[in-house]
Length: 212
Image (tube, rainbow, N blue to C red; front, side, top):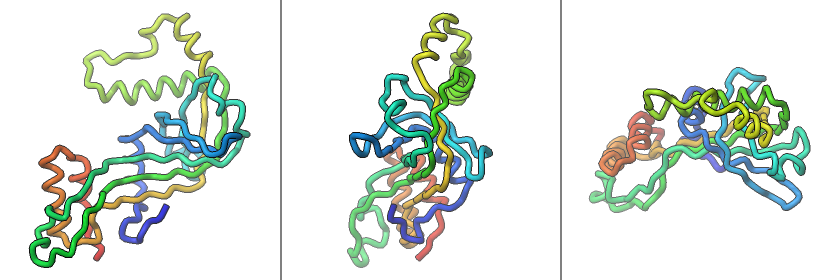
């Protein structure tokens, strides 16, 4: 990923926050059909191994389970907040008109090794943790839990999936938030985004530091 120095995101807390807030990742593998991708919700385990790991599950019928060798290199792409930025949103635009449209965004690329975990205990733990994390965000007074489903139904569902674990080797992250512009332009664009409902990206742009 091309990442100019002023957009390089190296803060571990910021990267972890993005992975927690946007857990749906594109798992890219190089298989028999060439490059392929599956879109999966992941758990980011910061304390597992030297660089952490990603955990998820896939359908047993997914070719990934039979065509990708254990330990194969993979890439998982996570997209955070993103939006179009108009030159009209920069306060300095009337002074020089030397501005062009752009797109601001946050993204994380996780590089690692894929391992299949075809055991019931692991799969149930992943399901339980995913459920707990995402049900907590629903705001429901009584979040759904695995125990709500009949045991025989849950057993059937568990047998139909396989756990995966990605041993992280390195992480690349990019926060393109207008750090290469004057503060007044970055903050002016953030205000316009806020007015259009892009609250997450607007907040990230306000928190960014100018690196002109």
